[in-house]
Image 1: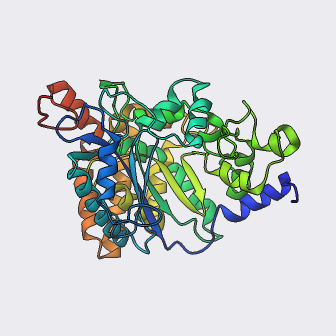
Image 2 (image 1 turned 45 degrees about the vertical axis):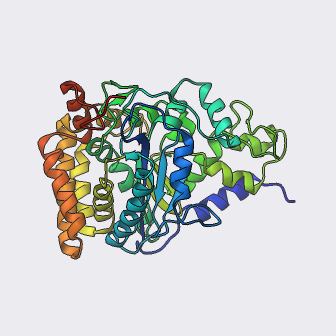
Length: 424
């Protein structure tokens, strides 16, 4: 086998991570926590989850959902649905709504509910429910630098919107816009003010957790120059989180080893293309190129709330007039020479203050208005446009975000995820 070299690795990464072509497809991934519907503060028996999933049609690769969304579980038991790529946001919404309804019904039959929140708002024990060697290695890796990795793995959930990279002429601009939208998306959809049942002082504690983790894999790549080269350098300079090994052997990686150093002979064996491909899956920047652009900075939303970031992002990224309006609204927020997202001051303001930050609020309201006009021009987007408009009026126009609903519940003594919780 020919050894993998730095030059070969960089060429490979530059060639596969941005699929070039006119923007056409969109997808969404939504995560939820699983709670007992009657006693949400209690731990959920994994056997009940297994029984819920067993009620779904079987498929060789796992439970089958009616619209074909991929169902996965995070290490702490969070459940995720990843829609099939669709050629317009309305079709994408139809697909995921159908699968969400089927999944919710299966869980409800076992007395379980899906809770959309960026962090688990309840004071439940955070414990690993997955024994896969990847997750064991991840836990060991992140534990070296504090509690944040374990919190991320077992106590956070998100919405991710996926859009095409665009044509050759569009790529750099779409890459920059996806990052520039980040603070607005963090602030507008902030929905994680609680951790261990207590207010944290942040509207998006989930984003704050990500900002405190290993910077080699959670910060944004360099903003200047060709996105392909920036991403290739980023991947090679990131620390190796785990190394796939034969059955029974731990996947632990040598502490501090970057993939570039591994290519230069620092590992206990030569790095392969398969190692590089797996390494890519362990990187978590705010915008991750996977052929398409995966926007990862949005907190999980209650119910069908993922419809709103789907509508907002797809409209601003794919409608030229909306793009121009968004860029104009975002320009005053720019911080030249600042640290990479999400560690710069603007992203921290977004996570800490949400829509109470006046500059972020103005930019957010303008972006929502631009998206609304784009949906009106597109036509046929009635449900998405209604969801977008209702969210805008309820939250950013009033200087609020979903986190404020959880905080209001705490202040009034109500349960943060249930208006009526039985005595257990």
